[in-house]
Image (cartoon, rainbow, N blue to C red; front, top):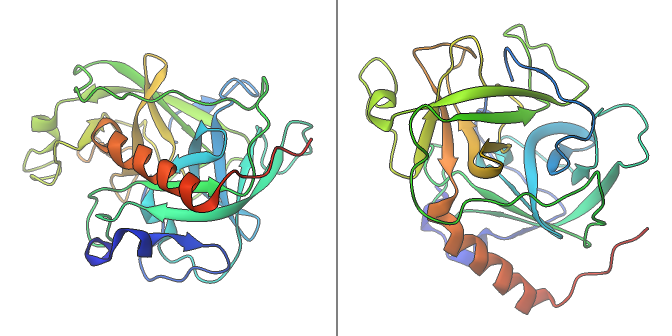
Length: 269
């Protein structure tokens, strides 16, 4: 478990990362292709050039994602792709950034869904433009009202046969109550106040969407964590890590990194 380690021992400077686990747990199903570059905050976390998880730009050198994306990573090189619509095609706006540090929340663990957040520090500041933008996130610690229509986007699998898209997909989902999500036939009490749930009847986030933003009213309120082993199972709503309880941690990590590392290089054009 990660929770027992001192805070700064959790900073992983890139070279290699090795861990055991079942792989990314976040599970877009039943959605549609996003208009190109309409969601310019989206990031693809890639290991050895292959998409593993989603994420989103929260500052000009920071991406927020999910800690469980590091599970079962093996040895390899992490990079973050920004400005992309297609993962494979040449696009003038696409740029791969080296990763300076991967910082999982100290309370995260492969054994639970608790504190499932990951901060990714990029090796240089990002060039912001129409196709690469920062996404604001909710800072006030209040629940999103039940029934609110929100969206999640990603390059995760789009069918339970494991079919992967090449282009960014998105889906709209309604927020459901924590009490309903905690029902005995749903998630049976594991949903904490730091989590939220969304409907999953034939529409859902799916494997490879982990770490992407759950967006309500134009701001990120959560991060894709997990759900059913079978995407779109209405009895197992999608689980999202709420961001507001972690604002102090996010701010603290960024401030400490700035003190430790000084200014990062200016963007390369």
